[in-house]
Amino acid sequence: MKNLIGNSPRHPGLWSNPLDQVSIEQGNASITTVSTHTQGRVELRKVSNQLATLSHQGQWIVLISPPNMGYKQMLAEAGVRMDRVLLVHAKDEVETLWAMEKALTSGTSSAVICWTQALDSRDNRRLKLVEKSARALGIVIEDANSHLHAKPHSQTDTHFSQASLFGSLH
Image (tube, rainbow, N blue to C red; front, side, top):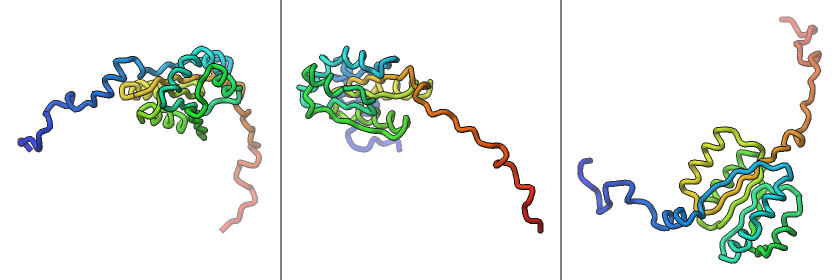
């Protein structure tokens, strides 16, 4: 394997796609994580003008698992092209982060916003790794009130979980 196959350069740093470098240098490929007490209303309102500008560039604005908070009206009032908004409903947190990763790195999105519960250190590290190859602006809105929306734990009766005293004997 000492011979070089083909005309490819030996150094892996030379294999990068120049479009990736341009989008990263322009600052479009950053992921911001914010904590909210308003289901993301305030945060979405702050970036809605930027989303309007991005939506007129022809790429998707991806919203992943948004709560029912009137985001459609808020975006429409800001001038976002609603035909460029892609809505993704994920079934759980793992699927939410996977969808965000795919949307950020696909090259078809200009902005990706996802709503999730508080992220742990593993998920934060994963997002930092995705940020290196991201081609879109990413915003993670962590729900600071997620503990209020959680279902209460059902208490199981210990009487029914014990082995029956009247089991069959062999």
